[in-house]
Length: 121
Image (cartoon, rainbow, N blue to C red; front, side, top):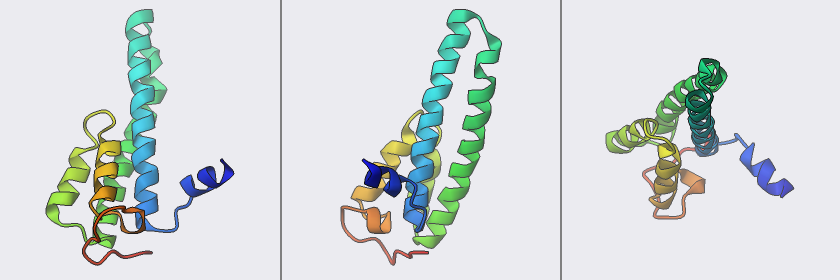
């Protein structure tokens, strides 16, 4: 368990940083969805203020890390576009991250075929 947590907070490569922010973006989506339900059920407009702000910040971080990872791992326009589009639907970043890992686009995190010149640093 400690190893899993340590691995989750390992930011030593572009792929690991991307995975961290992709998971964080999905978590903040989940928090925002819960807050929107609370807002409607309890008629509490303030319920979405903090989760909405946090999700917005993480969304911007995901877009930035997508561009940085695309450059570092030599993603083509299609892969980069899919990464950016994945940030729009809830939990899309998780789907993209799983897909990218399986298809060799996340360097050392990939389980599929090798990507075009993955960089590490």
